[in-house]
Amino acid sequence: MKLPVNLLIGAVLVALVLGAAALSLLWTPHDFTQLNVRNKFAAPDATYWLGTDQLGRDLVSQLTAGARNSMAVALAAVLLGGSIGTALGLLAAAIGGWVEDLVMRIADIGFAFPALLFAIMLAAVFGPSLTNAVLAIAFINIPVFARVARAAANQVWTREYVAAARAAGLNRFAISKDHILPNIAAPVIVQATIEFAVAILAEAALSYLGLGAQPPSPTWGRMLSEAQTLMYQAPQLAVYPGLCIVAAVMGFGLLGDGLRDVTDPRLVRER
Amino acid sequence: MFELDQLSVSFGTATALREATLTIRPGDRLGVVGESGSGKTMLGLSLMGMAPDAAQVTGRLTVDGQEMTGAGEADWQRLRARKVAMIFQEPMSALNPLRRVGDTVADPLRIHMGLSAAEADARALDLFREVGMPDPEARLRQFPHEMSGGQRQRVLIALALACDPALLIADEPTTALDANIRLRITDLLARLADQRGMALLFISHDLAAVARATTEIAVMYGGDIVERGATPAVLKDPAHPYTRGLLGARPDPAPQPRRNGKRPRLPTIPGTVPALGDLAPGCRFSGRCPVELAHCATVRPEMRDLGGRFAACHALEGGA
Ligand SMILES: Nc1ncnc2c1ncn2[C@@H]1O[C@H](COP(=O)(O)OP(=O)(O)O)[C@@H](O)[C@H]1O
Ligand code: SF4
Ligand SMILES: [Mg+2]
Image (cartoon, each protein chain N blue to C red):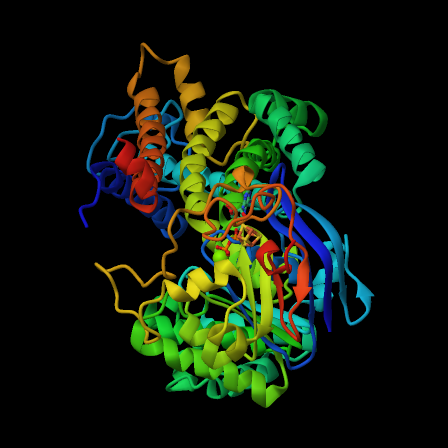
């Protein structure tokens, strides 16, 4: 089988970002919290590969630690929101009738509710924190996954093996768990990959607004916002985290698209 | 014991099953024959409480005296697998492609019989042996795509037998199979029914298979049961014009060869089955019937006792 280009590019970018994030758990070139005001705005050299920021901190170390942060937030948010959403979608499809309508109407409302607004509300009530950023991003994921899971589940419910499972006396919850869930895994995983990209962007936006991870833990979004006042003096401080965000978002986005192309032959034919 | 009294299944104006009245006693082996679209599957699904959501079901159905007319899904769940089980036509699509067949067979055992996972696995192995699965231990761990059509059908038979049902419904169990395996599956079902004292509702296009596997036969057309009786008697001396057409159109009692890659269909009777909504209110067969009378299209013929056998046809009503 010929692999689509978007899948390949996406996979490479994702591997780079995940690799950097994983590596930063074990090792960074320097301590990213280490201030060194005498060496601020250093140009790239053998010691500081991309130079240092306005407080003399090593940029490479901050960017890789930022990758770790981004991945952790996106992973937690997508897992949490994705599980709840998928469970709701499965339940809606299994029960049908007014329960299904109700769940989907609530999902529509959740869908229309801006994540940023929700994050600001959470921050206003509980204070800004990494946990609240995760919760806010997870929240917007619930309706997305509920829709995807329900649509896919409703298709699987029409299959003959589901009728055979019913004939064997399984109730709808057992059927949902043993027969529906494994057969909707593909579209749900594709969606998770795409939502991972959205979550990275959302995390960056929240951090940029100061609603995400708090100092000293570095994030791409906060690096960007701190660099903003220094745009004329040191534009590279904004460019590097910006590029990282673009690479990560594009990587997961392309990977998700590519996975969809290989797992859903119907869509490929429509192209 | 399954008792249907004037059971109908309709979709708006289209009646897929019309006032079916039928009793299935323990150990009965009843064949159901008729062209595609005559309502055979709908009859089977009704006995499982699995008529489509869109269908309106009227009439009465009792199972061992228990009123099941209008019963909910939860009530039916208690009966399925233990009182009545069904084998679906297409053995590939009736098995979850992502689930090991052993787990599929073990499911009802855990749920209905309260067996532990290990006990259910052991029982599934017994069932695989009983249905003649080659290399049963290894097969339990396989996925459907790793098996042949005949093996998959054996899995579905094992699944249906798991909780020792009083009635097994086999909906065209051999239609999707290769010709060389059909006879063996047919004989297996007949033997299992015999050994277990289980009633069998054998829905089939294949009259030779029905002759082998059943003792009684019901002929369906356009949602009606038009003739009933002992299998040999009905096949040897059909009373209803439709049954005669069905048998007469069959050139040769031997299994028919595949025609241009297609599986053999029921022999053809001149004309085609009209769309459900277009069926005459009287006898469904009017319009295609060679001996049609003037009032056939408007007046529905009653089921008549012809001495232990039954048929619904105006031409059989002396002088009427
Ligand atoms: N969901 C449905 N909606 C409308 N009509 C249906 C539906 N399911 C089955 N039917 C109709 O019911 C009739 C009987 O179908 P079926 O019992 O499957 O026939 P058979 O098994 O004898 O081929 C057919 O004419 C079919 O078109
Ligand atoms: S009732 Fe009339 S149309 Fe129907 S089978 Fe008998 S003769 Fe033919
Ligand atoms: Mg059918």
